[in-house]
Image (cartoon, rainbow, N blue to C red):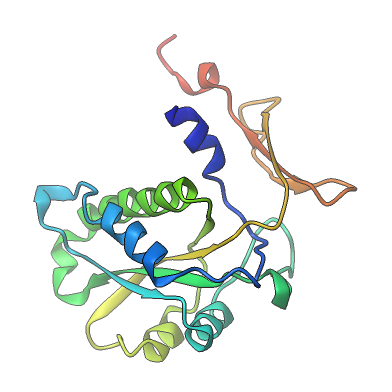
Length: 192
């Protein structure tokens, strides 16, 4: 059932770095992504996809992790083994608002496709774009909109109903279990 896949599709910040993501898995994820809807079917997004250890290390070095956990990042053995960097072309500035919607749709498609094959991911919006563009040799042609880390999950994550509509802060308990409060559907509907 789709709800089960959605519940599996969660932000994971600790991965089993010994489990490498294959080229075939990345191809399967991107095959799903190519069918994601885009505004006007213009398909204006480009993707930098890598499971190369040197490239993933370069990308990881330019990312910031888990804003609610101060000065925290995954330990070396917990780092992702692949990244998909979602890019927009610089010559498409006039379409920027629509492109951001396309980025969100593509990102969720990537996360769902990864979850469907037993992988986990984390959408990262905090990164050093200038350095990352230079590292990936894209500074002349692209903007980086979002970085998605991928790997085999190595943490326990528990969904829980938010006590109040503003109770959204994720946290780790004394057993290092990651808790993620989610608003109840009834709290999200404004016309009840």
